[in-house]
Image (cartoon, rainbow, N blue to C red):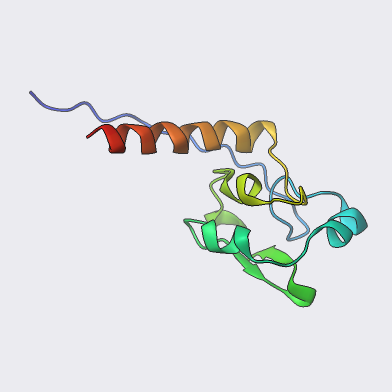
Length: 102
């Protein structure tokens, strides 16, 4: 029996200022972010890098899939889940759960 392939939909709600989706506004983001790089390390598309002052920036906004993993690992809350990234994170977690179940 052939396995039916599911179509996925990516919602692109990206910031135009280079900050990750869900990043706090301007100065608040800079004050809150510790520059630890956890968000960069977890990004499956390598859409983030640490820029000036160790602040995460989008390297290629088109490669960000709004998976929400960066917000999920941000322990200080500099990047927060948004409606789009919450949906993306739910999709990622569902796919991981299915892979784990075999």
